[in-house]
Image 1 (cartoon, rainbow, N blue to C red):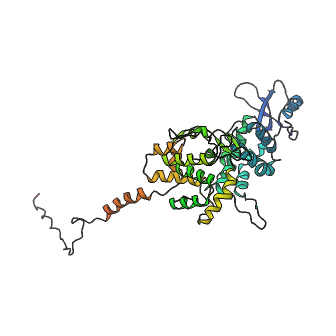
Image 2 (image 1 turned 120 degrees about the vertical axis):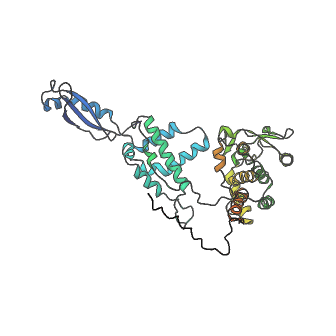
Length: 405
């Protein structure tokens, strides 16, 4: 990769005393923004500073030939070529963010300069705004979660910069960026009620009805639903195996290792899938295959054409496929099931993820517990009641002190 060389530097020579032995001549210079030093020789070898200076021709050439400045644009190019993760959905999102949001602004900046001034990156991230899609639409601040994702990409890029020796191994400077409120939601979480779910089904085409039913009753991600093949479904044993995901028409592994698991099928779900198999011929073995492409449908297209329109008719805000997974987790919590069971059904890698997932209401648990505390505090026993009339109690005088000693 072609690198830009920084301006030729002369450096400086200083005489340094040592506790033992003669003084030495030290050559000081900068490398990647850091002050470096190298011992040239002792005062016995070079009696004057001029003699030490004359010996530096080869050293200066070596340093200036080795010190090369890598721009942020060059770092991005190498990462896009060598550092992207294998998972297509993740790599495509990273590629888009780097090429269209991050790289154009910082393309000519030196990586070493950015490492010395992470506050500049922080201020830039805080000021990010959306790009209007329609004419007359005004840009708005980027969502806190999207800003946090942008910071994470910077962090990953600078990890690679140290790995590829563009920077010294040190604490990642992007870890100093602070974005308060990055975990706060900008839109209220939508939990679908049973009544809303039934009204939705009446407005959706057959294939969407089956997908929504699987999402509502099993908590599957839409990528996992689209990745189902008939070989993964055993209607006789009433089980379903999650083996893959399909995102943007690309089949790949599930999001995490824990996501790949076997799930039980209720008899009513078995009947739904049996009716769907009899109603539609399978397309290349997929449960929800597109006749035109031979691959599963695109989740975003189905959401825009069918799910959002049906949701608008029943008064729901923009409804995403993941809302059904959040609803499934909320129903598990309302039933009071052990967290281990909830984690298994949600197929989370840790219980911590299950506990914070959904932010659902826990009034069915907190209300009775709070009622016990209130009744304890507000209860009035005969001993705690204040008497109607209070008499002044005068303490008896102390016995007189004896006059005899």
